[in-house]
Length: 300
Image 1 (spheres, one colour):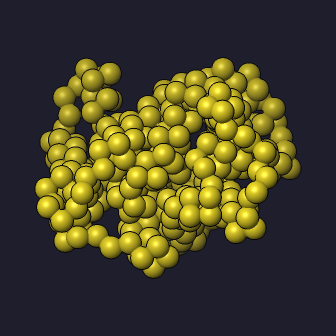
Image 2 (cartoon, rainbow, N blue to C red; image 1 turned 135 degrees about the vertical axis):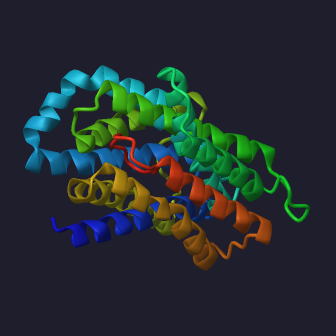
């Protein structure tokens, strides 16, 4: 793939990832509930991606079976937990604010890495962490009298960021040499099973009776855009651009989310929240500077 084509692929991937929060809010307006939606989203996505791999990389898909315990650890403690927290956060927060808070994860990764590796954060990372959390505070409305802070929503969104940071770190340390596409396929499948069990334990039904045609359409878009297309496009772009540059370009996701939420949902942010958004994006850009870690942007 040419570098120009790869650049376009990563930009389009970011736009696809950005649709997730907006689609979740639209699903709730149609009567959808977080746990059944997540279960069906991941189950369908895993089936689609497994079919794709069976046709293109069958040996890699089969080889991934031996790593199922590691994939299960990543899915249940990181990705699955992040997804549940994020989808419940979006019942309390706007798509824009929820996504901005989720993108605290690069800063959290930087802090945890420094602790685990017993190394001091370089100055650029310290600035990145400070910018990100200052931006999150402003985006959440902590310093804006015109905004009512939704504490449960903020805590859930930051919980999602922390869980996704854990997923990012564990995946880079436990299975760094494995195909990321295989990783995401197994992650989606195991997450579907785990969240399905949580759904039943919570007394909710997984039978989609009563779902409107609009809700089915939204689910289809969730699978197609932020779950399948976004991952495939991003991973294909990495091959030509390298992980560091691709990750930097992917910081456009919050920008796309804010713009899309404004157009589709009519969301509006205050001037203080806009300032927070700019700080978060600046912090992400600094935190994502060359780290040697191949990761997929947050599509929880």
